[in-house]
Length: 248
Image (cartoon, rainbow, N blue to C red; front, side, top):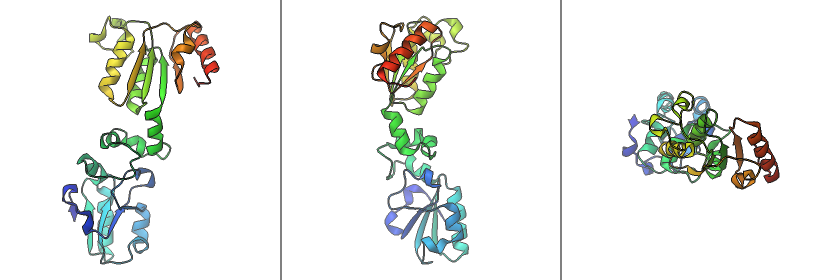
């Protein structure tokens, strides 16, 4: 049978089996064991020797766990339940998870697609949250860069730009709006980022970067994004970044 997360009593189950791919099991139900979907279907006795065991099967949204539940029942396991809505529903109810790497339930939901990637996972997401990226220029190139960095959960974003939002910017600079016309681009960008992701701290400098201030403005950055539109600024950024040992 399917069981709603609110109705689950973990003490009732002998085995809680998480059949999500291993890259997805960064945050799971306490006491669960991770078994690949294909493995549990082909060799269930390797994981659950007794057909009388009370079993709860968990996946991401409840579809794969339904398949496993039906297959286990067909092979003689009598007490098998599938978690309705999967781990996604479990987390949304605020129920306990382990192995979350210090991420909150809100963060587990927000960065869910990152956490499912083996190349990122919880450790990669923590690294993003601890990183500082300096973006020089909040215009045509800087706007989408800032949006995606904020969405990805880069913990601190430093924005450097001395320009103001103009009506002609709106066609190609998606973080700026009609309400922001006449506003400093760094302030408009800050408002956008803060409305998108509360995990991000924004540091803004309404200054034109040059050889005299580049090192000062870029100090502390893990990475620098050059979104400027002139060679003088680019040379200044490159020279400062080389001196600071920061990649651009």
